[in-house]
Length: 102
Image (cartoon, rainbow, N blue to C red; front, side, top):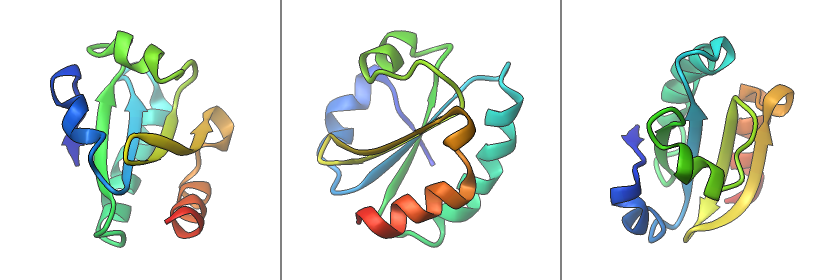
């Protein structure tokens, strides 16, 4: 899983499919989801997985309209395909989004 930063955002937008995990250390649900996403990454080799620490990259998270955690967004070429936030952000819903959208 790559770290998404303001510095590599333009490179990120070139990816055919990218899934971004928005998290912060004070969110227990985020921390529980992280190892599940790392395991899921192996099943979707054509999707680039990114992790965005909302404490370090607050402005970037807000620009992507992330207002609740945990949040996961699936993108294609920088365009949002699917956003899952808060109670909808489960590993089963993420798997379903990946299977349907790409």
